[in-house]
Length: 142
Length: 246
Image 1 (tube, rainbow over the protein chains, first blue to last red):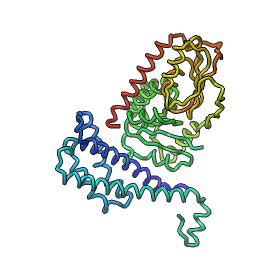
Image 2: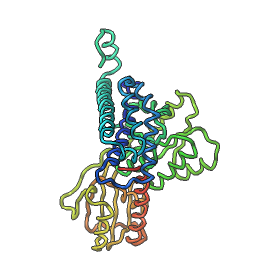
Image 3: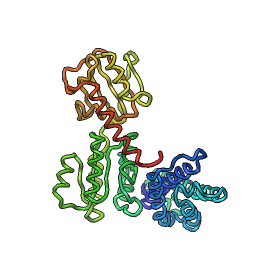
């Protein structure tokens, strides 16, 4: 069986994780010790990713019941990381906080994504009849 | 077997009516991308049964046409709002791009999407292995690209048949005295088939010496084909590189 709301949550979290990964690629690039050149094109892509995250984070987190836990940390990351150059110029303490907040958001989303996939796997192995019987006799479906 | 769909949707979080319907379908695996460059990057590496472009008619058909130039054998479908622009529809037909309207009720749209997916369901299974250790040259496209091995064979004036096997299907290129004489892949023949094989990055190949095709579908010298296809490949790679840091 397929649960549409579960599928939607997985899809939204997958899209969100992808964007957090891309943001991390840019942060890593900005903090590279060899200080590689930052092009205008890269800054544009960074702003695009940041814009998408700013738009979508609240919605995705509310769909996954994560808004209370992650919204503040996500906003901290997005406010500190205003541009690739901005990240490069951050003081060491701020950089540590940025990376720690990014890690907290990424870890939590990853864990929830995994849990949802396990639920999906369990649901796929059930048919409508076994699910109804399980509900009827009060046992947890998945 | 699952059908694999690559969906290009610039706003998959908020414009997700179609995506939710695909989610509910059994035996459908979807991969969602937001930009054309991401789509091309993935298409270079993975095989999909259908590429779906969602969005405003003019933009979607433009993106689908662009993709068609780089992937001639790919099944492409545009899901757009109903358009009365005859030029756009003509362009889509010319490029062999399917068009479907999303201006309908959920029930109708769901039915429409089901029909689309069932029409494009995977027709080919995993290709049979069948590689004989006696073949004069056997290898993997991960390590050597088609361009490299064809270049080597043409330089040494070989005659015979190259067979390429990948999840995209099987294809053959026939050489005659170091010239490409004939090429086939699915319904494609000649230079179009050669162009397609040039993009493969996964699969296996082997060469059978002495098998010569009676049919001739390629008439240009190998060097011309090589330059043209490498140029096309560069253009495709350029599209993927604009996606930023990879």
